[in-house]
Amino acid sequence: MNSGGGRIFQLKLDPLTGNSEWVVIDEEDQGSSPQQQPMLATTSYLDMLNDSRRNRAFRQAIDKSITKPCHVLDIGAGTGLLSMMAARAIDPSKSTIYSTSEGAVTACESYLPMVKLMRKVLRLNGMERKVRVINKRSDELEIGVDISKRADILVSEILDSELLGEGLIPTLQHAHDKLLVENPQTVPYRATTYGQVSGTNLFMTAFKRSLGSGDWCDHWKQCVYFVPGKGLWVSQDEELPLHAIHTDISISYEFEIQAFRREVELYDFAQEDQLILLPERVAVYGDSNWRCSMLEAVKKALKGRVCPLCLVPDDSVFLTIALANLCETSHVISLFPGLREKGAKYLRAVASENGYSMDRIEVLDKGKDNLTMGDTHQKKVELLVGEPYYYGNDGMLPWQNLRFW
Image 1 (cartoon, rainbow, N blue to C red):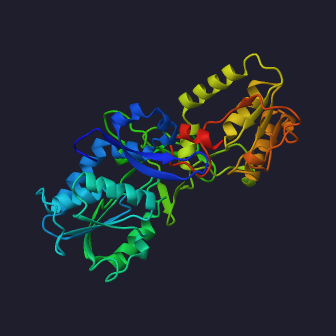
Image 2 (cartoon, rainbow, N blue to C red):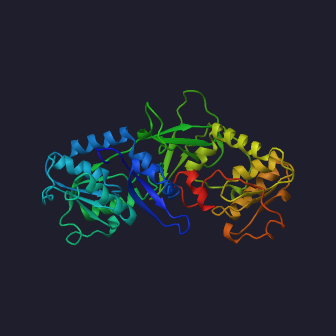
């Protein structure tokens, strides 16, 4: 963000109140203030901003789109990175004068802590007078009130791993109807999704932006979808018609069933016993290296323990089942704050299929703060186990969510 280097931005969290604020700090200051380190957490958002290939692609697309002074609207501006690229494309000089009506950049961001951070970033880069920041949702903007006229070019990065999960379609539809000129230019203007059949009824996708050589970035996340219906017999190099269906915020896929195709019988789980997990979470569960690492860690933690009481405070169905199977004398309490009763039904179905008793597994309909010794049968928890991730905080890197337990 700042060409001078030595500055980074992090999310400052108060573990007592849960309040957060984005702050800009000097790297050298971190060593001199060890007491502030527990209050700072890095997120995958930072990893995205440090993705040089992504940034180069945006810079090239913006430079190619802006060939003369124009009005640029940045929706979901975040730290203002794309807004600064647009401002420099409009006026490559180092001047700090206010943008003219012919050449202006409006940055729209609804999240106040991010707005505060954006203003700091713009000031540090000498761009605070070239980008106008508005702390509103884009669908709250009005021509003649918030912005003087319709924008000629839209830049935005409101894409998640499923493409549509951040409300891309309704946001862009409103922008085209209310905020942009007729036939505007947009950056980006299209997305390519690549898919691969994985197993009998799984379909895995990844964006083109996530492919290529070089080091892996944490913000690149594959998605795995369960295709409805039974599986299909397929041969190598056989063409397999696939339909994509979308709502405003999600995409689902289904295979085209042809009359001559033979369907594959799958496990006969009742519909109500099936879990609907985020495609990103399904992709994690499908990673054999991840599963092996977690199982080894659980085995090591259980070694030498007799009749341990284990607590799983998150939505980890995987670890609940692993604990019950790896230690026949364990008693497992799972909270399932997000899955709740659906998670309990799924566990019962899995126990039935695998021939073990649910007597050693409990799912409590309680928050972690309300647990008492009565809930644990007057025993103290011997082993706290989590993946870890925490329901409702998927935007943070998983190990930072430990503080919320």
